[in-house]
Each structure stands twice: as C-alpha cells, then as structure tokens.
Image 1 (cartoon, rainbow, N blue to C red):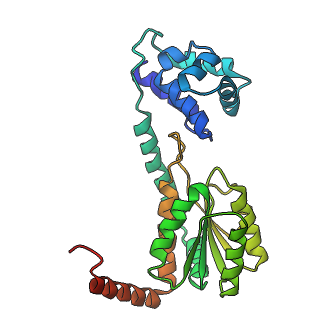
Image 2: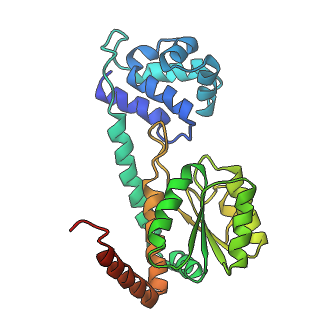
Image 3: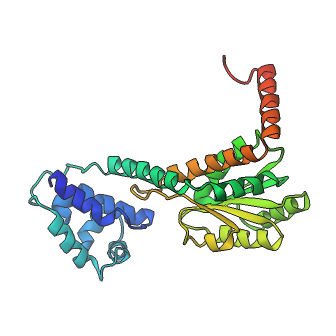
Length: 280
C-alpha cells in the first residue's frame, strides 16, 4: 500500500473511541492493509490475536452493520495489490504523536479565556486538606499532580484506590477541613470515580474535574469542569493534554496563594540543600 492509501486507512479509525482490544485490531488492519482488506473476520482475528466476535464488535463500533461493510472500505482505501510487501507499516506511531501536538493546540485555544481555570485554582487553593482523586488510568496523573502540589500546599491527599476505603478517606478529608476536591476522570470512565464525585458533593465538597470532554459522564457531576482531549491513536490512551492541563491548574493554584507558595518553595529548597537530596 502506498503512503496515500495508508493515510486513508488511518483516517477510518482516527477519531473513533475504541477499547484496547479494538485498537489492536485497527493497528493490525493498518499494518497489513495490503492483505487484510481481502481477509475474512476470522482471518483478521487470527492475525490480530483476538476472537472473531471482537472483530465484528470492532466494525460495529465504527458504525457498520458488520465486518464485510468495513472490509469494503478497506478495499477502497487499498491502492496496492494484496501481494504487496505485508511487512510495510504505515507510520501510525508518528501520526499518533502528531495528533498529540494538535490536542495541545486545542487545549491552548480553550485556555484563551482563563476565567474557569482561575476559579478552579482559587477553589482548590483554599481547601485544607486537598483531596485529589484519580482511579485506574487517571491514578498516575493524580499522583504526578499530588507530588508537586504537596510542595506548595500543606496537606494533599491522593485518592488512587477505590472500594469502601475511598469513602472513608473522603469523609476523613471532610472532617479535617477539606472544602473542595480535584478529580481526574479519564476514559474508560470508572464507575467508582463517578460514584466518588457524588459522595464528595453529598459531603459538601465542591468539585473540580479534569476530564476529556464536556460530555464526559464526569462533567455533569462536577461544579467546575476543565477539559483536555485524550489521544486514542495507539493501543492505550495518550494523556499528554490532560497532564499539561493538570500542571496548568497547579499553576493557577500557586497564583491564588502566591505568598504561601513562595514561602513553602523556599522552605523546601532550604531543606533539600540541608539533606543533600539532589546531586550537584
């Protein structure tokens, strides 16, 4: 398949919200499009290492009645014969990375009006302690935010595990004086994260959510919603824009309490030098 043909195949899946298994199928079709466009659903399943029903569900997730309809589109996109070198792989990795650049551009455009960000920063800066919720895919991002937030706020509590202990920790934070919570809720949206947002509001906590879309199920459960698109070009999501938004939000928190921020940063630097934390 030539480069233009590969781009057309990529375009069939570029904006679809797919599960990791479905992305494996998409990548298999892209990488082997010269042959896959003429294979049955069972043969594609064998090539991708998934079940045949998974291939059918994949086609239906793209809006088709079944795999034959999708295969017809693949045939139209393929401009080379099936005998073409099947080891040729369109550069879907570069395509995915370039889409992340576009996602950052969309985020920058959304921040043209900083009012929501400023409101969220002030809301979270005033909460002592500050609970930060992030479950499943969002847990590393919550931990990353919490690591740096703890340098400027006295009590940051990262909530990265669910179950009944999650409710306990929310109640404990509220009893300790928390007035607001930051929740990072990313696809595939964990039910426990959505439930936790409801519990937080029932406890009287004001909620700020970082999520991927204004129509995310987390958006309707939050007082203040900040969005950043999630990259879906690889088997697993790319969280470049949400991570950037989280750090921009932390900047807004610092701007809301500048004197305290400066004092705590200076205290940390003095402590770091005394304990020789970092290599010169």
